Amino acid sequence: MPEMIEVITEIAAPCAVVFDLELDVDVHAASLAGSRERAVTLNGRRALQLGDEVTFRAHHFGVPWRMSSRITAYERPRRFVDEQTSGPFTSLRHEHLFDAVTDEHTRMTDRLHITAPFGYLGAVTGRILLAPYLRRLLCQRAAHIKALAEATGTTA
Image (cartoon, rainbow, N blue to C red; front, side):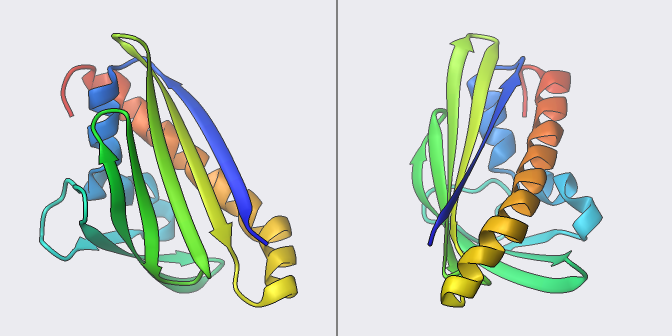
């Protein structure tokens, strides 16, 4: 059974700035430094684009995790989607939406759809343990993006 997690963050910066920060693998890793997050791209680019694949390595629940995902939709500066190509979930789809409230104010929405492995047991674990944990990670990452975007304002 899939779980959907949504986090909405208001940011005092233009959509393009927020969009570019969200696609920077170094910013992503820095936002989750507590889990020793590392991100490696196949092409060496740090700013992801349509079709790019990135592998994340981190420690969660005291266990090393590895997940690769690909950018499957890219509409700068309004939306992009990344989807797991290999990793711990049966499926993972993360939609990133950027709405211009004004020229200098963005509403960033993260919609994460996950399906945990192991059938019914995985679904229960996903709802009770994984979904709240992933929501906290998304909120932590959003706060990091917000701080960077509002500090830079016009440049990524």
